[in-house]
Length: 158
Image (cartoon, rainbow, N blue to C red; front, side, top):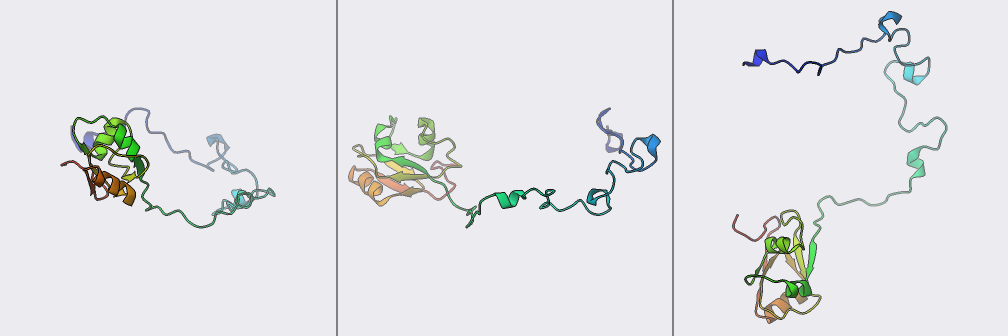
């Protein structure tokens, strides 16, 4: 088979409807545009804002002020009491281990911030994208380490 042998599947391509070619063709006279008005004229389809006397939709909606920052980073919060409740085979806590524990859906898409609610009594080596000061101090006082990961990394050798 060569490129010149390729053809679309049977029935997948339809013939173009030829407008304004007489009434026997099925779309003669007004060619499906109705009679008179802006929609029947060439080169215009009316304005989006015009709704035939109704109050336009954009005037019905409330004002939306400000803007949405599309580069904002949305962190998944993990607290110290959740780390304390984790049953781990070792002492390392990474975004991947938190995903296996069910705290994070996708460790590549959701950066993690560790916050200071609760008490941490066991020594853990926690790798996350951000730490609150209280959380980092509590992890270190329990004998563990708080390592900051760059955004996009998940804390394992890739």
